[in-house]
Image 1 (spheres, rainbow, N blue to C red):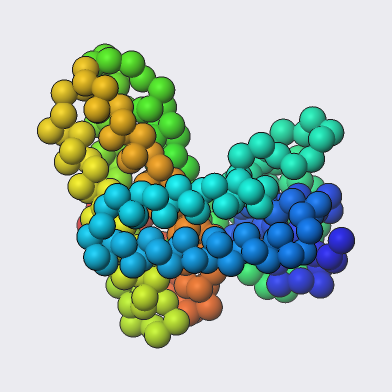
Image 2: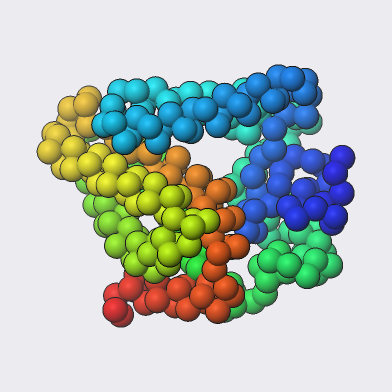
Amino acid sequence: MPDSKQSATLITPDGRYIVVRGRLWRRANPALKSADHERLVRDLMGARREIGTTRRSGDCAREITSRKRVHATKVALGERGPVWWSDGAPDYNRKLAKNSPYARWYARACASMPDEHANITASHEDIVMDIFEALRQDHDKQRTLADKLVATHGASDEREALFTDLRRELKDHAAAKEPHFYAPLMQHDLTQDRARHSVAEHHDIDELIEKLEDTEQTSPQWLAVAKQLQEQVTHHLDEEEQEVFQMASKALTDKQKSALAKDYRRQMDGHD
């Protein structure tokens, strides 16, 4: 097992998760043969490239197929879907390490590492000054709302309330994130393409919201579109936290990360 203290990325002692900006992400199944793992990683990267190509060409059907391919490949790798361990331990994928059974280990590991991990064990007041944690807090709200929305039935008050809350949360989040996160990233060669890709995904989400607004909530089509929205939001947030945040961490200075968090939070709280 890799020594987490000697790696830029923390790995939990049981080898089940890596820690990225304080959050647990499930690792691939170590029982996979090396050749199979390499093949699946190649497939994953190919599917992600296809998503960008199909979006640029406007081929929505192929884009949906590519997204399904990404999900299926991640399940095959063991990063999503049923867990690959057999001791009955629950899945803490995407949970904050500090709020999991790994909290003590994580605190000790952070204390011994003079890098970005150490900052995450600071007080809550310090944490919210980091743009990544500020965004992640709202990501958690969006995931919860999207999950609850697709579990509703018919044109109920609950469905209407959840859709209203999710729509507002997504629109406000995008409106604040684009100037206070993506705009600075577009100034760097390292992050320019990823920032543009993420902004394009905001437009994809807007289109799905518009479809829901134009569809009767009693129609089976409404739930089908809501599930597309849930998948798109989940994909967007996962990709952002796992990939964009890592590149942005290298492109932005600590001072920028703090300043952007304040500006973002101010706009989200309605003080802009």
